[in-house]
Length: 144
Image (cartoon, rainbow, N blue to C red):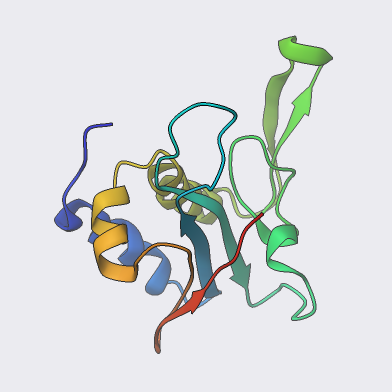
């Protein structure tokens, strides 16, 4: 995967950090221990966002934002329509389409692993990264 420089990630991060309705966001990053015979490659997983409207009790997994995730509790999103492999994304549902678009832009870039080298260098392997306006918290992450 061709890698992009930190200078291209910064505006995507800034778009969320400058939004006062976004409380925090984050992701997990790690090299899997097993990949069914394929090479185990470092990647970014489980991008999530907490807004001021989200209940503090919601688990990060309930706050994930990505193409194949259910709509976010406060940001909305796209439902999958149809059956099986032919399912298509439906229209946006919610009241925050512009904010959702900014969130998806960052999330899609992270999950595409085009910043994997930059993030591995910055935060290390097997990490849970949480970003807030007050700073970045990196915790050890154990995955199965």
